[in-house]
Length: 237
Image (cartoon, rainbow, N blue to C red; front, side, top):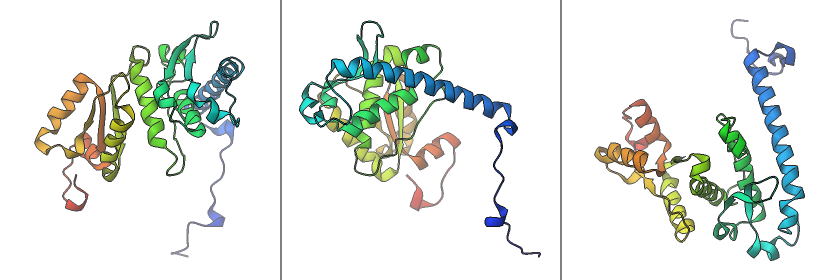
């Protein structure tokens, strides 16, 4: 009895009924419901206007043939269909169908719309891009970041932090250089993993003042934020 297991099929926790949820949880559920409703309305408008205008239909076999003329418009005037925010056509030319949709997914879940930005409804939004390895998540994120910087007068973006495993941090720098080398506006990106420890604060200040993308590993982020000195040399950065 003393060492009786407290886990297993007989110890399944009860599912909380909706009426028993606390006020904050109920509010969060309602906010999310309203957000999804707004996104569905925007998507319907997008499907009936811009997709017809660009002659592109999702899941169509004509995707590859239409690719050279394809535009990825994320925000547009509901009356005139004029583009307000769109991904550089130089990047769109390299996108596959799932990447095209992935960038729209990122925009919808991080920013939602210009109206949401103005009213700060998107402040707590976020998402997970859960594609399998090798399906081009890095290109999608870089395209999304570039678009946010390109329209910084709307998105209010000045700085962006990319956290990754330390062995992938250098690859992020290479990917930024590869995809954005001939595309305006150019975005400064700072690779903190290769900077001498004594120069890191100066580097951080430079990034914060001048703007751009800062790339670093998880452990370094923890050390900088918490001021923790990691004694285990195997996980030091």
